[in-house]
Image (cartoon, rainbow, N blue to C red; front, side, top):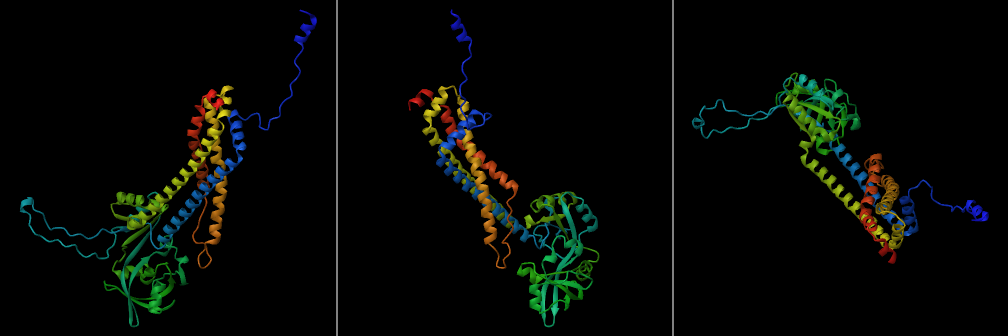
Length: 433
C-alpha cells in the first residue's frame, strides 16, 4: 500500500455543512412531527381549533351563567328565613292505658289529634348552647313566634308576630338591606312591619298599633321601621318585635317557640339538621326539607346543565376525531416512510395523540377567552330595569381550569382511534398507497 493511500485514509473527512433547523434540538421526535403536521394543514387546524373554542366557550358561559342563576335563586329564597329551624315537638294523643292482651283492647276507640298551641322549647338555653358547639353552625337565634291581630281605628289585620334578639337574628336576616323607612331599633314597645301592612293600615314610622293575641295578650306598640322582604305576602303578615314583648303577648314567659340556625354552607343544611336531631333529639327542619320541590328543581337544573355540557364535549370530540382520521388517510405515505425509517408504532401512536391534545388545548385557551368575553358582554348588556346587574356571574379559576382539562382530555380521547389506526399501518402498503 502506497504512502499516498495511507495518508488519504488517515486524513479526516471534510466537515459537512449543518442544516439549520427551525425546531429546538431538545424537542422529542413525536412533538416535532406532530407540530409540522398541524402547521402543514393550517386550514384544518384553524377550523378545528375554532370549533373546539366555540364548544369550550359555550360550556364555560353556560356553567357560569347557571351557577350564578342558581346562587341568586338560593340567596333570594333564603333572604327571609334561616337555614334550619329547631321546633318544639307536636302534641299527640295517646290512650290512657293499654290492655295487656291485645284481644281485650277496646275496639272502635276514636283518637283525635289535639290542637297545636304555641309552646316553648324545653330548656332552650342549654339546647342553643349545645347546637352552637356543633360543627358548621354559624349562629343560633331564639325566637317567640305566633299569630296576632293588629287593630288600627276600624281596620284589623291578622299578622305573624316574631319576637327576636336583634343582635342574633339580624345575622340571619340582614334587615338593614331591606329597611325602607325608620330603623331596626327594637326596644320594649317597638315593632317592625312590612310595606304591604303599612299600606293597608295607612301608617308610617312613629304611629301606634294595638296588638292582641288569642292567649289574652294585649299591647300598644310603636312602628320603628318599615321593611320590604321582596314578597308581597310576607310584607303583609310579617312583623318583628323584641323577644320579651313577644313572650308576654304569646303567653310564653321566658320561653321560645323556635331556634333559628344558620350554617356555613346552605347546601349542607339537611346534613347539619340531621346531626342536630341525632345529638339533641329535637325536631330540626332544614330549608331543603321545607322547600323540597324547590330543591328538586335546583337538582334538575344541575342535571340538565351537565347533560348539555356532555353533548357539547361529544361534538368537540367528534370534530377532532374526524380531522385526525382525514389526516391519517392523507398522510399514509408519510407514515409508511417514517415506519420504514425505524419509527416504532408507539411513536406513531404518541404522534397523533399529541396532535389531538394540542388541538384540544389550543381550542380551550381560545374558548376560555371567548367565554370570558361573552360573560362580560352579558353582564354589560343584560341589566335590571333600574340599571343594576341582573345577578352576579363569576368565572372562577376552577371553572377555567376544568374547561382546559376537559378540552385537552377530550382531544386525547378523540385522537386515540385515529392514532391506533395510524400505528397499525403496514409500511409497505402505506408507501405503495
